[in-house]
Image (tube, rainbow, N blue to C red; front, side, top):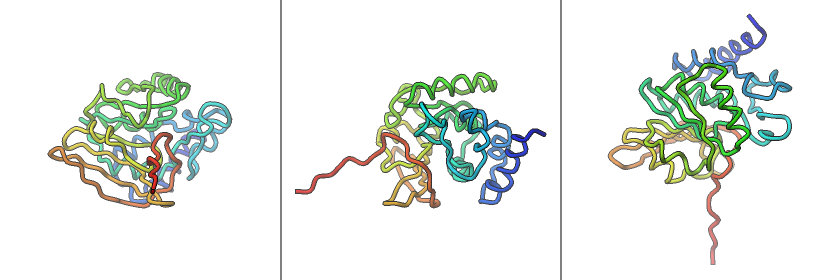
Length: 222
C-alpha cells in the first residue's frame, strides 16, 4: 500500500466515518479517488489533512480551495445522490468533487469559472478514466441552463446567497446543497424542489472557504 493510499484510508476512517457519514457508496468513492492528484505536486502531502487545501501554492488556483474531507462528505451525503441522478458540481476546481459525484450518479457536470482549473479538471478526469463526467467553464452563479434540469446541484464552497438561476435548474424532486453563510457562521442547507416550489432546511454547521460570485447585493438604506 502506497503512502497516499494509506493516507486516503486514514482520512476515511478518522475524518469521514467518525462524523456521521454512513453512505457506503460515498465512502467507497472517497477511498477510490486519488485526492492528491487534484492539488499541485508540491503540496500533495497536504491533500488528506482535515483542512481546506489550496489547489496550488501560486498562480491559478491559489485562492481556490479543495474542501476539507469531512464537510465535503457530509454535504454530499445530505444531497442523497442516487445512481440515476444527473449532478451539477458548481465550483469544481480541479475536479475532485466531480469525480466523486460521477461515481455516485449517472453523470456529473463540473462547472468552473477559472479556465486553467477547468482544463486541469478535464485532463484529470480523462486520466482517471471517469467517462461519465465533463467540465464546463462559466459563471458559477449562472449554472448550466443548457444541461438542466439537474437532479442534484452541489455548491463547493460557502455562499451568502443561492441564486434563483440555480434553483430554477433543479428537476422537480431535485435537491441543491450549499454551505450558506448566516453572518460569520456557515450552515449546510438542503433546498428541495417539489411541485415547482422550493423548500429548505438547515442540517449542520459548516466552515469552508467561499465560492466567488455569490455575494448578496448591497442594500442601500435611505
